[in-house]
Length: 448
Image (tube, rainbow, N blue to C red; front, top):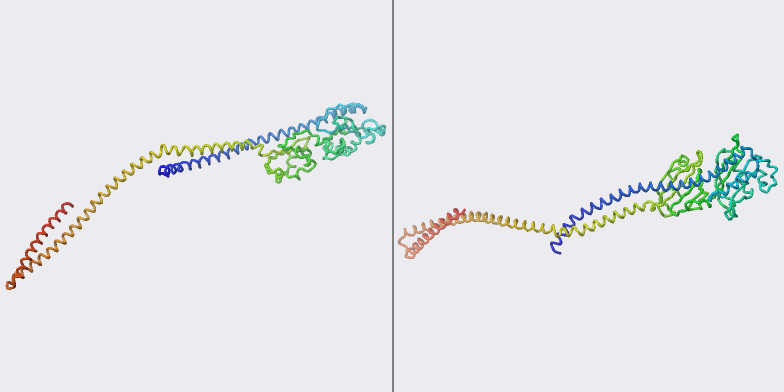
């Protein structure tokens, strides 16, 4: 790998890594912030969805109640007008029964003993004998779904309900019970409404049988709607009919830290998000109250899969992640090219200039070192030469002394004369060398 490529990689990493860290940090913060904002908006959407379900259920209940109130109003008007003809009341019920909703199974009108005519006169009548001649009419759906008058044996079960209605002196909704209808057993709940005389005395009741099997309510697979009464008994569930009749508080619902029944009866709402083990998914659970009448509240639970509500949140997060990835890829591709074409030539140019300057400085430093070294050598040379001169001087003096001693002894042999002559010549030669050395020393001193 060339030096140029190594330099490109180093500079690119030095620039790219901090940029990537900054972009990823900003992206993560953006995703979290966007998710929280969109989640808050989603909760508003959830509340709106649950409100739609609530309104649908409330409309369903109100339609049935209004239907019963219509019968109640006409019956009270007839009774207060002293009309006691049973045929008239039968005709009224036949007309109203044609307007019965798809959610209802049957409607009935039952008076107290001797409230309409003399009951003894009708004890043997096939329509009244099972209720001891009291006036009662039961209009329901047959096996083909057509509305017709059914036998009064179905009213025998209703007699106990009248006592409860009289005791409460108000509208009353029974718990769910099983009854044979259309040749099969169904789970039915009866809503009862008292009929009053001019003296505000209860003279009879109007009843409406509603079966969860026949309730025509949102059958969506994704959104679960569960209706339960003030006691927590489940009346209807569009996704799981097997839990109808069970108590709402005994199921898996994630309300451990909340008393749902107290909340509903206090007209309060709740929303929680929990994991549903049975369905292996996270759900938003919204519980809201439905005011039926006076201080009686039912509750409706709407369960919505989290993925259904937050799918737009996930899409936004994925899009931000894709955008960040694209930006990082572009940076990794573009930055090295820019560095290779624009930055590295500039770096090389400055490196060359720097090397040249450094070389010049080194040369200058070397020259100075030579001068310094020369000065040091000159000092050493001068010292050495002075030592030599002193040594020569010592030898000269010795030679001179030797020659003088030799001259005083003339009686010695010719060999001694030759020796003295040679010594004189050597002394002269040493003196000449000494003079030359002095000149050299002076030269070095001048150079220095």
